Image (cartoon, rainbow, N blue to C red; front, side, top):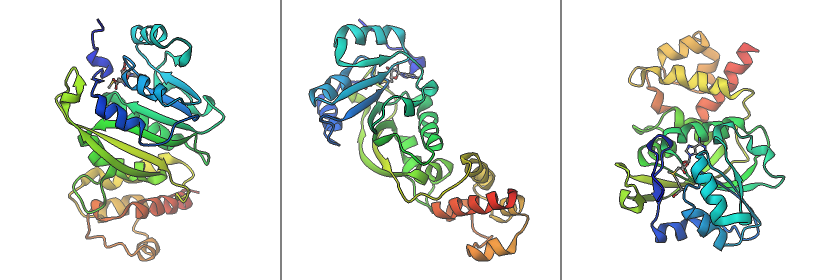
Length: 261
Ligand code: SAM
C-alpha cells in the first residue's frame, strides 16, 4: 500500500469517468506523450489504452518511480527526476502531448518555466493540466476581473487556454481540501515577441505591486512619464492595473525593451 506524501502534492485521481475524459480531449493515438507526476499510474494506464507512439513520464518520488517500473515495464520511459530540472526540449524530436495532474505546490512554477522557456519553437502540441481551481481561475482570468493579474498575463502570452472542467475533491485519494480544474493549452503562433521574458515579469510585477492604486505611479516608475508611450497606447493613468488588456502589457514590455536597449 502506497502512502501519499503531502510534501510532493500526492492526491491521486481515481475517478474513472474523469480519467477516461482526460485522455479523450486530444487524439494521442500514435503520438508521443509526456506525463508529469504519474504517481500510482492511474492516468498512465488510460493513456496507454489509447496506444500512443511512446510515453515518457517524469516522477520525482523514487518509490513511485520504482513502482511504475514494475507495473508498466517497457511500455513507458521513466525519468525519476524533478520536472523543474528537466529540459523538455531534449526529450523528443517531435512535439509532445503533455498530461499532468500537477503537484499543486509547484504548478505555477512549472507553467511559468514552460512559458518563459519557449523561444520560438514549441516543444509541445497541447498541455492538458490539472490545477487547483483557484490557480486555474487566475490563469484564465480576463482583464477587468478580480482574478486578472501577472499569472493570467504570462500564461496567455504564448498559449491559447481553454477551461475543460472542474473536478471535486471526491475524485481523488487522499481527498484534497480544494476543488481542481482541468485546462487545455495549445501554442499561440501569433504571440508578441519579447526579447527576455524577465522583462515581462518585471513590468507586470511593478504594475501589479499595488492592485488597487492608479496606474500613474507604476507607469512613471517604468517609463519615467513618457508621454509618447501613453499616447501610443491611449493609456488613462487614472485606471488600475487590472483594466489593461493582456496585449497592452506585452506591448508595454516591448517599449520597455526598446528603452533599455
Ligand atoms: N498523476 C497522478 C494521478 O493523477 O493520480 C498523481 C498526481 S499527484 C497530484 C502529483 C504527482 O507529481 C505525484 O506523483 C508526485 O510524486 C509528483 N511530483 C511532485 N513533485 C514533483 C516534481 N517536482 N517533479 C516530478 N514529479 C513530481
